[in-house]
Length: 521
Image (spheres, rainbow, N blue to C red):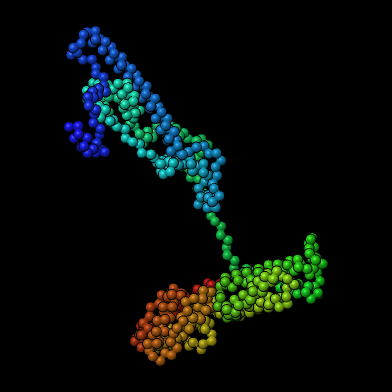
């Protein structure tokens, strides 16, 4: 039999069996005095006194341990609550350097008020990091320890103190007074004692209420970009300064330079025509010419009418001249200004400055010519009441003065024969397309011109295409909605077509004229 037991395979998860001849385990409870005890009266009295004494000791010990556990639990929870709320009296804390560079952070107010706000409102309770709410294990009683007990059994002091689950003692739970078993529900948790723990975080009299906002919206002041006139003035000043420095370097090289009487005297100046002197002179020239290049670049890129500059001098040639001057400066700095500034280098930089002055001079002449032309525009001034058609005719002729004059504009509604001479001149759409492009060129916003159109209008569909191009371009560029029957105008399909065509031309003229007038005034 023993051999069979030894040879039987054992499972590693199986619980060990009791030893042979072992005594049964005593019950972990103390029975109360029984009325059916078969001992003597003395033994019964002794057992009664012993039971009552042990019961009283056990009750006192459980009460003491429960009170101590509750107090420690309350203090621990209160400290945890205070720590979870995350608020302390500020100790002069300031924002980090990285946060100070962000307008959104600096507009929120002080760190102290932010801490106080979140602490008082509790918005961060139980949210990640150190403030994360830890899971509280549900306090339950191991029912295995109650096996073999009667409703009236009471745990012994040794059992309550060591063998049983310590959470049972710290809960402060006790057997149900009705004798129906022990209470196994969880104690009052942190979420149920918010009112109790709020007392640990009293209001700070030196702080604003948490509902008071300290947000300070700071408007970032963006400086107004300089106008073209200001950029032009800056460019002219930079060019004059650079030209003055180059002229001085050339005269010093030739030996004909005479210092002005009011020239400042600087201490520790190196001796003239030495390497130190050449380096100082070269750095001075480099600074002034670089500032002139920067001013020219700003003026070219910010100009409102770049096509005007392109008509004076092509953009490719302007860039080539700039790169040539920059290459000269690079060569001077590479050789460390040894031997001073050379004659060809001075000539290259001087010629570039003269070419920029020439561009500015020609631009001023073009502006003067345009200003004189505007002075001759009669449609911009005076009272044209009752002479609206004549005013629009004068406007159309001023937009394209190189073209042949337009015939008199008589109203189509009062004309016996349609089309009128004026509408017949517009029938193929070519004159309207040219007028549109001329108006775009004379406005300040030079975009939306008609790039391709039909010059040879012997075919009817080409005239219709020109009319459609004009109507669509008026919608895209001047936001003037025009509705015409292009084929009806080309084929003269009836008087209503000419009335609509005349109304469309009047609408376009009034809209474009008002826009150009507002831009110029």
